[in-house]
Length: 171
Image (cartoon, rainbow, N blue to C red; front, side, top):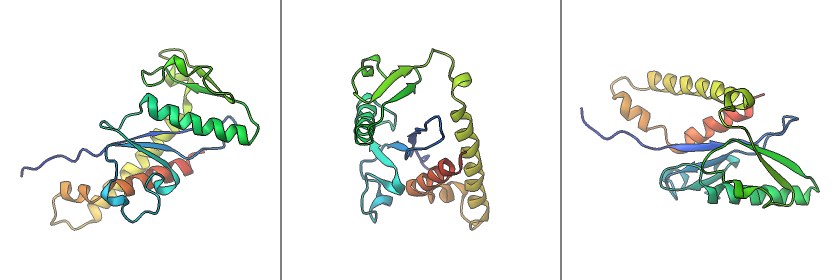
C-alpha cells in the first residue's frame, strides 16, 4: 500500500568530561513546535534536553554557538576553565577558537574520529539497544495494523525519551 515515509529526524550532541560527568544532550529537530510537545511546560527542554530546530534537523553553527555560550556561562559561574574537543565538521568553524573566556575549543585531527572518540561507539551501542526496543514495540502491538502505521505511532517525544535513557545508561 502507498503512503509517505515518516521523515522525522533528530540530531543529538552529547557532552561529557574526562571524569565521566555528563551534560544534558542537545537535540536538533525539524519542527519548531512538534505536536507531541503540546503538553510540555517548556518545549525548548523536552525530557531535560535542549531542543533546537532547523529545516534539516542538523547541527548548525548558530546552534553550536548558542550551546557553547550557555556552557561558557555555566563555567564562569562555577569558576572553571575547560577544553572542548570537537571533530572537524563544517558546522564547527575554526572561528569558534578564542571566542569564549572559559571554554577553549580544540579540533581533533581529520579522519581520527573512530580512534579518538570512544564515546561515539558507546552511544551507538546503546542506540542499537533502543532500536531493538522499538522493534519489540512494533512486534507486540496489534498485528492487524501495518508495521509502518505502528512505527508512526512512535512520536518524537518517545524517541527523545529513549535517547535520553540510552545517554543516562552510558557508562
